[in-house]
Amino acid sequence: MATYKAVVLKGTNDKKSDGTTNIKIRITKGKSTNYLATDMFILPSYMDNKAGAVRLGPSKDFINARIAGLLKTYREKDMELADRRDYMTVSEIKQHLLSGKNNAKEIDFIEFAEEYIKTVTVKGTSDQYKALVASLKIFNGEKLPVTEITVNFLMRYEMYLRSRKVGNGIINYMRTFRALFNKCRDHFNDEDSGRLLVNHYPFKKYTFPKRTTDARDHVLTLAELRLLINYQPENPGEVFSRDMFLLMIFLIGIEAKDLFYLGKLQKCRIVYNRFKTSRAHSIFIEPEALEIIERYKGNQVLMNISERFEHHKSFYRAVNNYLTGEKSHNIKGMLPKLGIRKKVTTKWARHTWATIARNDCRINKDDVALCLGHEDIDNQVTDMYVKYDYSIIDEANRKVIDMIYEINS
Image (cartoon, rainbow, N blue to C red; front, side, top):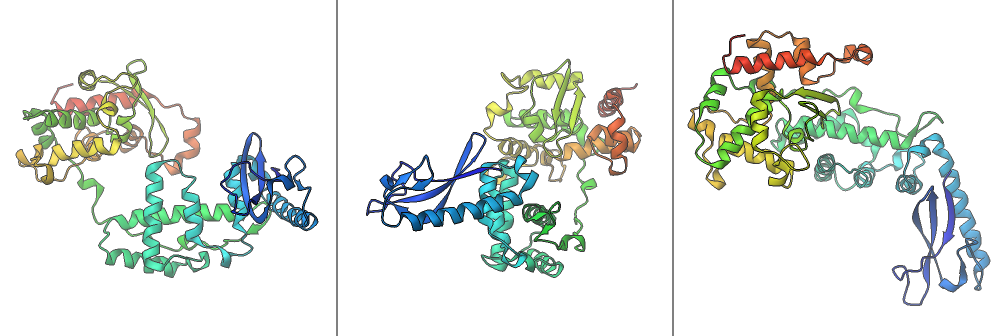
């Protein structure tokens, strides 16, 4: 259990014009502390911080009784956390104490989401959550009781998104909605104690829409890829863009974000955890990849991309712009110059590698999935016992690169 004590702080932030200051409840867990404001104010000299009680003043008995009542309430709510407390920060305990919800009707999903977002440290995830909350506010208003989130509500919200021409982004909005709803259930429910404030789950019956654009269409053919390889760049931007796109293919369709943050080589291999799935990857550096890496050597990391660009998003936008063109900066784009009318992005490298591996090199689907780091849900238990043979991945990648360059094995 965390500890709770009434104190007044020495700073002037809480002082009123009459010289009184706010009594706060200090929460302590280990070496971390946080504070809960109260509606009580006294002169600082009246408070004994060591004892956690008011020692002077005409209303000291009344205020001390109020403090005792608050401490009792907070300690009881603290006990509800049981073992969960061990994994919670002081800020999360404070959030739990302030929730004050006794039934689902009192839980405002928007309020919960906005508080939860403050604890998210990954900017991309935080931005997705913020975009969803902003959209829900426009659709439904500033408040959204969690009990109103039903299958019907989800369908109406999906129709609203369609009316706003969101397109394939609807899937992202609804998946983000589901993720935040799951966080809400986790926060307010405690299955061990039987305290289930949010006991309905509308996403169980909700059918997510399908993408109208098939990811399998995001592929450059061998002929198109060879045109890009043989293209003579006309400026440094084109040189860099082509190098990065080819490198992503030579590294088995590595994501641009993962490439941006790669660390130094480990015995001729890159070893990293994919941002999207957190799964570990180990890829042998083939000569074609090494040649590009050597041109862009970094100081602390594998490549100097992070020295060129402040953020990974700026990096892949630059690559995309020089691949397909960008009007506002008068960038023509290499692929349009080659007569390839496709809106290619860095994500196409992954699909292109996979398609060449399967269709042109005839590598079986299981090995392609292994190379891409996909998790087979049906074989999760088996995967726990299998130590991957990276030679399978290395051989598959070599076959793909040989096919691209028409090297006879």
